[in-house]
View 1 (spheres, rainbow, N blue to C red):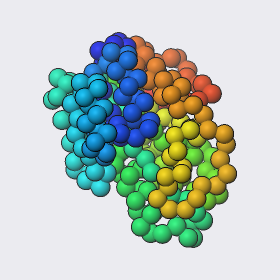
View 2: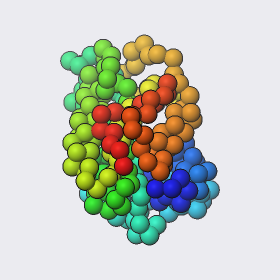
View 3: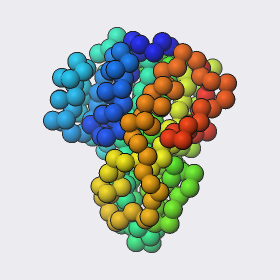
Length: 237
């Protein structure tokens, strides 16, 4: 895949990470299709980039699965998918509400899984399927049990998908971004975050991620930077 001209679907385009990804892809001369929850922000982003756009609901799993076929039709094919949707909730495991736990698993795991399940037969050989999980998968803090479990479920799923798509040279990327300065933790649907490390620069982290996804060929060893490292689902193209 060449750096310019790649056709990429960004799901969660109206979030902080998703918006940075869309702008970064546009700056790299890629063609994007956008899906997001905030309809006004989605329309503004689509107008700024000239991208087709569609609203989404994480609870509509069938609709999530249909995003990649829609994007492929709109762009004349699909080279990659990046899913950046996510939500946080915090608190001791015994106190997190069942409603919050269900919400975490739906948004953080079932929604991205549905998107990428629908994308797997659509994305071209040698392309990529990527989702943001987070450093919490490797080092869950006290008070993050349900949040960490939802992200770990997605990470496990990505690892199996990577093995299943290896013959097609489709890179399945588990992007375990560190704590970033996006205000994400402060927007938790329940509870308050535990003490967190100093946040990193989201623009730098997203730029490193895009460079990895759009590289003509994957490096022989996993790329590691201070701001992003691939999870175990990383596959060479």
